[in-house]
Image 1 (cartoon, rainbow, N blue to C red):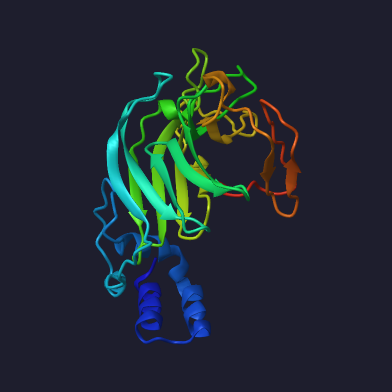
Image 2: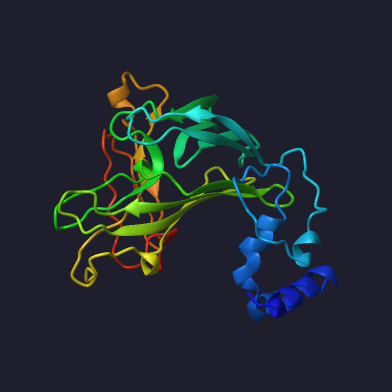
Length: 296
């Protein structure tokens, strides 16, 4: 982002201009710098692993925004191991926020989601639940997988140790992003092509929202392609968020994914089913990119 963009944004923020003027300032080139701006003005709950970028003077203007009693918190947790034994052990962050009922929810996040603690009101009582990685299948949730048509190989993204994991609580502490950066080994089979794809996964959390937003970016423009494979001929899919979680109340570990129904949104085609099933496979219409999904 250019210095002119930051200057324009800074003037709009500092002088209290109208909403129209502020949006005009954003259109002048400030949009690309918003995430960097928010990172720099992180509140005390910041547990990022590294950030050496110099902070802008515009960022400093927002550091005085106080936290409130219902602010998001991010604290360091213990080291968690993968029950499947293929992902490297990692220290996690516990991110806690207030949902639409003003009740606390907590995600235990590292390179992926290990545990999600929450409650809900079924109209008769408040029920507390924990979804965790003591699960059947491929434990944990929120990592990526890719299949190809050459060999059918589908490496689990949680195997790749991330190059960076950071939890960023924005100034004011009502919005947060948990960011994971890794290089995904697309071809690990013996006859593979050595393709490696940088991937960025982000979990967005906001006060008053029940659930996080999961987003992924596959940086195809930065892919390592040592054999110069023609990607117009090479066929692979991208899947995520991937994994298995075990929900409280299951009779056994291998029944933890038995659910009574599922609902999902893919604007403008919301879907829902209430039929009990051990496995629910969701096929979205191929009319628009899936939400939270980017290929660069």
